[in-house]
Image 1 (cartoon, helix red, strand yellow):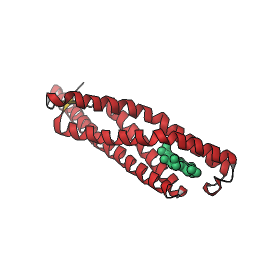
Image 2 (cartoon, helix red, strand yellow):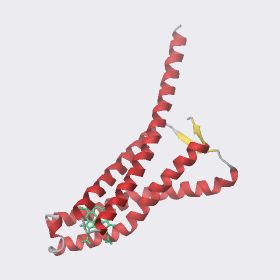
Image 3 (cartoon, helix red, strand yellow):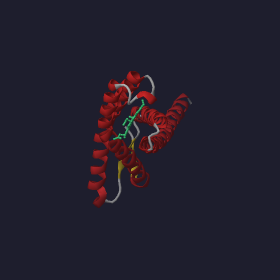
Image 4 (cartoon, protein in one colour):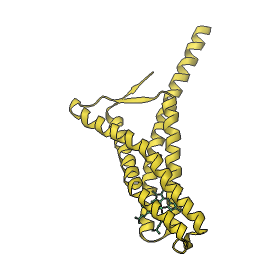
Length: 179
Ligand code: HEM
């Protein structure tokens, strides 16, 4: 009787753990895609000279990307992993995409932090977004901010788009690995 109860409890824990990890996996892709959309909107606003809306959307994009990182690490901690089990001829292309995605996702963290650091420094020097061009130290900080974003924006977009592609491929051809 006890053995049976223990067996059922263990089964329940493993089952709900896998369900939880799968839900976390879904939410992590949702957050990274939303962060990419917020990024595009933020870039659109700075293109139109709207600094306040630019700042808001970039902070939203950063918060969503942070949430993604938390969900991703939680999923890894739960030991949930999906392996490609689709057509063999697509395997090299899939792994090339996966490796480039992982490398650039790791690079995106310091790139985003660098862009945010210089934006914060510029904002502190200016006191307000309206005074960026009047305060030389703020102008210099935002010029550095712009140089960082030349790399940050394309890398971030690549990571968001490939993250979604990988998710879609694994929904179709993925096999859940249990550790
Ligand atoms: C990681 C997040 C961010 C990214 C990826 C980003 C991206 C960009 C991009 C692409 C530009 C246009 C660069 C160009 O014209 O060549 C820009 C400019 C600018 N950003 Fe950000 N941004 C971020 C966060 C912020 C934040 C939080 C603020 C507010 C404090 C801010 C304030 C500005 C300002 C004021 C400019 C205009 C600089 C100028 O006068 O030309 N950005 N940013």
